[in-house]
Image 1 (cartoon, rainbow, N blue to C red):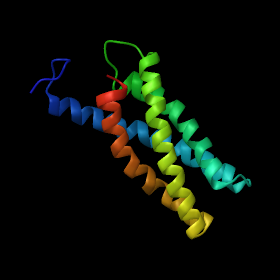
Image 2: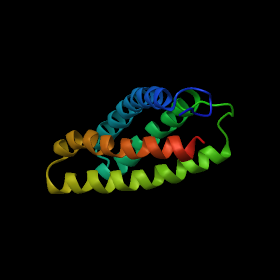
Image 3: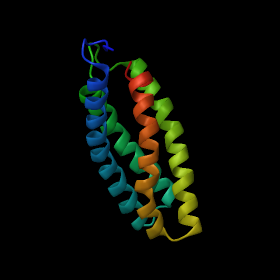
Length: 135
């Protein structure tokens, strides 16, 4: 099977998957550092998580739109609106999960659990990005 750019679909999917993981890792580090820094400074874990995800999202939207899923058309309003819709849904899930873990255990456990929550959501985000946001 051939994709829209004339390459093998499997090769394109593998390339995009590797780039998505790399870009996701970079944005996750920024997200995690902001979340930990703000919650350590006294901000509620839920609010710190949203702030961290905003920082990571802004960075990730640009990285994935210009590198991972770059195509013939530049990033535009349609991609941004789709991204924002998906981001709001995923941020809600992330914040509920991390907040629940923080309330059920300790703040430090929630900090350690956040990467696991984000990794699970990254799988969903990849397919939403590939098939909907950056189309």
